[in-house]
Image (cartoon, helix red, strand yellow):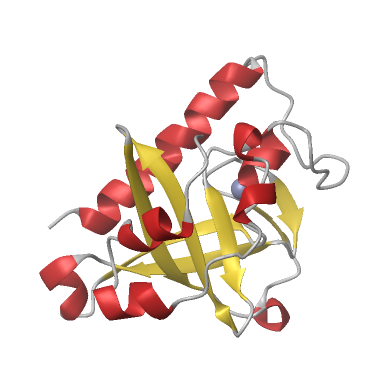
Length: 164
Ligand SMILES: [Zn+2]
């Protein structure tokens, strides 16, 4: 994806208030992130480990989602599958919950998905980060197709968050 600035990221949040988007923690090392290898940038809030965020670019528009997830200690140790990149981790997948955008969110509605707890899906798909043996399914898909699938999953998740 194309590199984004802090300002672009803050302006891209679809499911929190402008004030929250202004205050939430955005990584300081944006310039050093491996953007070429990222389908989305995901990070956890160092001040609030139960908060995580992801940002991607859909139809040329940056789109960011604020997520809640249990801390590492609350994660089940069984093997589970990330619903975005389909990597299996033991204890490394978190249920992340995104409040819905707009009115539905104010009424308390949210959307949940199982994600790699470190939000490094893009790197697992590309084999740049290793999740251990058996973590990646043996598939006949090309890397390109796996990236497309991950992006489609991320786009579908964001569409659910922004749907009325
Ligand atoms: Zn993943």
